[in-house]
Length: 169
Image (cartoon, rainbow, N blue to C red; front, side):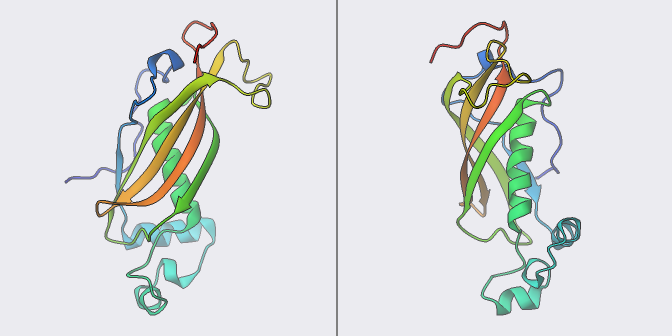
């Protein structure tokens, strides 16, 4: 399998709520997780915990190899969502649980599936997110490495309605 770095998959506009159905899957985004990538990410986030970039210390701590930290995993999930919804869409909520290590040398696959479609909740409706123009989609999202789910989560995204009319669940 050939993996490409994360790049925007949506060209020519953002996803519209009217184009989404329960059960739809996000396009899978793949990313090789190299030691160099882990070192760069650790320096950007100032997370210098050696288990994230030092192979000997990672193994001594019980991990199979250096592994991605929480900030990196959150950014990867958001990048997968962003590739799917486009730049106009909004990530309203992202919750996840790390199940296994995402280690250097793995190819990570970020994916998701729509589990619900509806209106924005009252607390999500703002001047910037007018509920006559925006709706919401709930997404089960994940990261896989070596054919195992390593991260599982849920997200809620706001998408523009194609015609500004109410969404019916």
